[in-house]
Length: 152
Image (cartoon, rainbow, N blue to C red; front, side, top):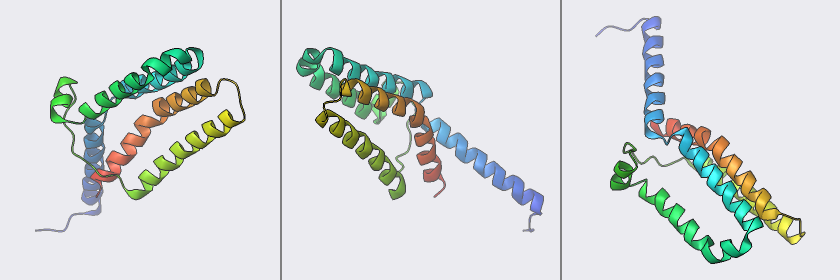
């Protein structure tokens, strides 16, 4: 076995990095899935503001159906029904989970404070903020978690 040259070592490391990114891209959800999820969250916020009677009667059912679709999408059978390749379970690192929890806590605390101050259209604005956050930052977050997970 011979020692590789610096150029061969650089090429091998670039190839490993390229394959890691390919694996993360293949394992993740499409950008359209994130956009649709963001639109649904924003629409739910608009519905909660404009038609509170609908949210009071059907809101729990809508949330449960969306959670069911998300859960089923992570199973083998659900993934095949949704035409998603089965992906490996990658446990996110604690820093990623902490960041996610901090963002969620900021949204919840901000919405609660705004509701307590009786700011008009709180549900509308929090739904729009959450929807835009999911649609814009979701693909980035997923890629970050998957590439860190494959790097271990």
